[in-house]
Length: 570
Image (cartoon, rainbow, N blue to C red; front, side):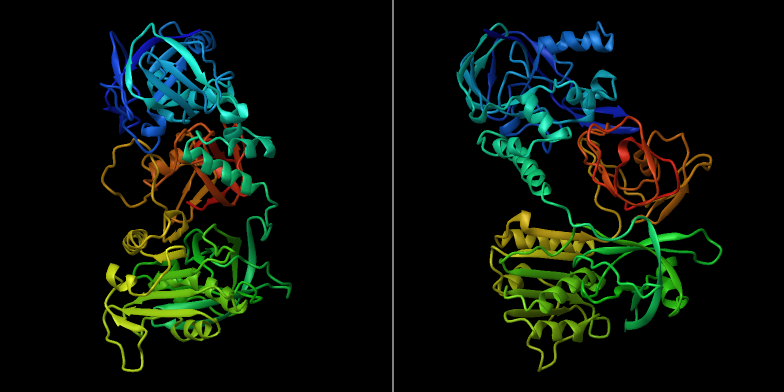
């Protein structure tokens, strides 16, 4: 029979790591005597990052004595003590390839259910001084697992562990871990995993996404950059102009999905070519591409597009990309934008109008005034083609005219949006400044919309995901400190930074961090794919090799370096 060998607890603390401060509870130590296990925790224990650890489905982390022996040999370590892997329970028995998701156990007075493998996380590597540990745990099929507390009670070292129920489908912790993180997954096993009620909601969602990805991908576009011709330039407002692009050889352009964007590479003056990304505002099947660009006060590229670009000019364009796209379905559609944020939802409106889509559609746009309202007439005409359309315009600095019942002075509020009659089962698409989208997202959620059905497209760099790292002062992206690199040019398109590569950085992620570009990561070893980033152009090499490569056209920046000039959508 399996045995509880050690009970380990520790409260979160701030730890210095790579010139950052990490708030973490990974430092655990054995305790003597009985400890009360509660629904969310063990008395005296805590987690620093509740987004990835802790909570009802991850109340107790388990690791095995046998795995300790294994890593002592593999790592050449003789200093490992119980709690070093961040576990609450160190057990003799209960190997990852025998314990199944949904299995239930009694330990002391308490009862537990197995919910998921350990989350791949850089902090176990930080605790052990082994940076690659997150990857090694997965590659060697020794992740450990989490328990949900079914019955609270006291436990203590030496308690026997009794199996009181087997989970359905009989998929082991190691099976489930490999299914998420390793290649060559079996679709039938994915379906079996989704039949396990005990599996934590986060892992269920990941498996649903993987199952959906098994459908054939729609391949469009071209690799890298391609030369297109500026067909015409049309002013939309005093500060917004639309640029129409077509091919140089009269061939057709691949149809973009409504909501996607283009990356454009321009040489402005004597400066090195600069890359910027702009949403497509045209109908997906229009035959040409249209981007609509606002002239920013200090925008080098947007200023050149407005004052220097001419019809007939040739420009380098990367193919349409992006996941902020209008999905098929029968649910009502809500398109919400502010200012130049109208561009991607404009393409969605074109698609709906072209199909005479029967779904109810709400078009909600905020502008400063009529003069600075792009696509006002165009959107109004498209909405008239839909069988069930609702148009609502907000002008922050101008009152409505008597013949404009759809115009309101001010900004959208909780009460004004509630009055629009938006159904709770709608799919919402939002684009605009971050504060606008944060506010409207909150209002829509309070109105009853499912957060999973609220889709947003953000200007510039995406918000950072740096689990456990204590936030510092916000710094605008900049050139990296220190000597200028001599390697291939690396361009972070969303952040507007181009800089030569230097081997002083361990990875493209390290270079981005040196530039204070917002980054997204968790394991930092090529396992979790949190850092996956679209590769607009160029070539990279991996070190270490990721356990599963990302999709073509994407790169894991945490373990990659440029082998030629690269442009990243970061």
